[in-house]
Length: 390
Image 1 (cartoon, rainbow, N blue to C red):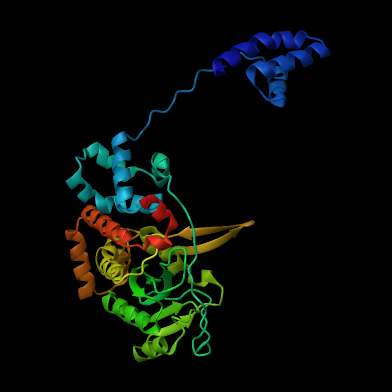
Image 2: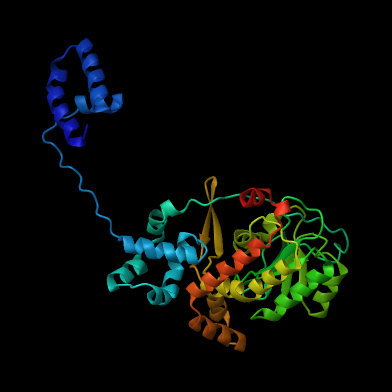
């Protein structure tokens, strides 16, 4: 029964209810609730209130404001940018739109809709496409026992307004077994700019981890001033301590069994490693070379030049809930450009490179290289992949 039909039925039953006896009122009320599907208390308020004077007009349905073309362009950008959440997607639309025009025909009206759509509307429009497989596994790092007294514990965040202070962590690519040698990914995340670098290393050799960190340090567009690691033996060792002392790098560690102390790099472990390489096992030299080629090239450029991220600004307790406030989404390169008083040669080169690169081409090239790396995974330790292959 529609809204107008219910109102007409109320007008007819209202007079009968007013004249009815106590028992008849109860039966009439039950009949009214059954036919109109009203709650009994609400039906009583209607029948005991003012008599209905007129039938209310039907509500006009809002016409969709955004066309199918907007949804299609949003979906294309969203997939090419590796599925960012709506706030980040809204921030990267102006940056990617000039390149969208080279791949699709964008009318002035469509461009206006893309630039004015809100994050909430993006969530609604992309809702049918957001059915992704989610699974969660944990890394396999063992705590180191040496040199802990020489490396101070950092329980809070780096209090800094300049880049160079970051967190490091190791992500295993062991599949469903941890025996033998397999590849790990070393992740470095700068706290101030969110700039992230990754390198693949075979095993957890202390020397290999130090060499990978040294390679990251050479590629950073700013000097490395401090690092914060967990208590794994791949970090708490003489090699890394001596390296940090020789290069005047502050070295701190998190509290044991407190992953939240390194929340920044833990989040990047998901977006920059797990979402790309999955939970497969990689243990070959060919996979190591291809992963490092990806990490040093298209991956670092795509994530740091084209994908904006948000930073936590403040927390506020509201009753039993904790509200978090974030700044406006910016790419790591834009954060570096905003914080740099004088434009360095590396930042100037990266800015010019971003103006030349087509993010859709970089994304397509990235997908192709990832498919090659996935094909190099060890199916013996990936049961699900082995079943699919057979």
